[in-house]
Image (cartoon, rainbow over all chains, first blue to last red; front, side, top):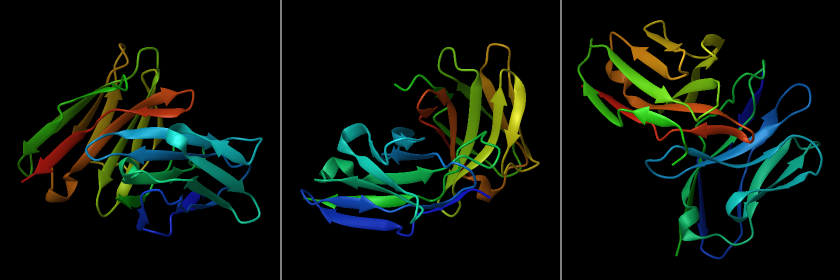
Length: 113
Length: 110
């Protein structure tokens, strides 16, 4: 079965510091993975995706993620956090049939000023 | 505005009642996905429709059902509501970069 794990429920970082939100995956076949962000009282917004090709994927709002096949990880990173980055972040693979994305509880990122 | 429209934004109803949530996908998108977000379960996939036909099922309860109409809007019907059904219900439609989500319907069962 396809699955991801976001081992941290919450990540706290000071504004201006680099941030990492972790994601490890377990998928069969060639994995493709997404990161989404949810701001308070809003729907989810697409950040970036990995399908194939470069392991370093650049996305919206200055975020990037590195796909690491040997470590089965797809961590989300940003060199310098902003207070406005505070939100709930989801790493999502497709389900086994490839017909829908699987989300979980996500990781809450809190950036302090 | 994502282009995916969900109504109503908020709904308060009593246990045992039945409600209908509505979703209009982005113009031209044939797929509609329904998700339920709660604190304890996170964001769970319920069901997908594609051009009027059910395409995939997730963790959808038997008390819940959905359909997609010829104009591609979709409705999620929740019946015999329980307190535990209180959640945010999201609809999404397909986009080249994944999904585009609506802003959700917050259902409160009292």
